[in-house]
Length: 220
Image (cartoon, helix red, strand yellow):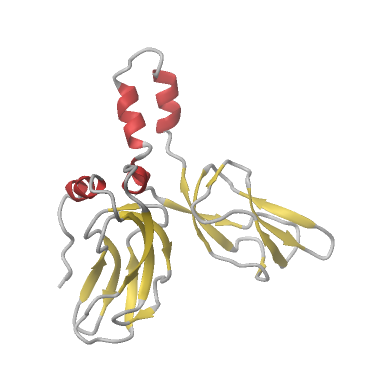
């Protein structure tokens, strides 16, 4: 999983400004200097650009919010250097090309692999956690846009007695997270949505084979 990096409001030569437009959506790939949000001060409007190329994993603000220099506005996954390396190596050693090409489309394979299957967005709910309610989310283990295998840990919960991971009930692409660290959840709470192929038989064995080992539900 790519490391997420914070995107902060740079020096804008003013104190507080209002967010008037969101220019990108979660999951978008942004080039360096591509606009993420537009803000408005008493004197002018200005765009806050992406400081590096990568995928927008999470937005921390909304239209109408007030921000200033140093405010956290988004989390981005920096672009991998592999595609550039692939282009440089393509004309000469052909052995590297299949490896790089196979790695790039991997996150979308469970959704697009089968012409007979159809993609479906399914909500992921908190399963039976022993009757506990208002359990704290202490860790988020995945990011929006990740390719998820069966039993991949999504979030970690902490009760008075133990900690436990909530696993993905099926493979697919993580479209959204509806909880964050510090939230309270109970059995049945919606924590995420995953896009999965429901009718194609081919992607399922691939996704299951890719999971090295089911994640244990309890840490102790």
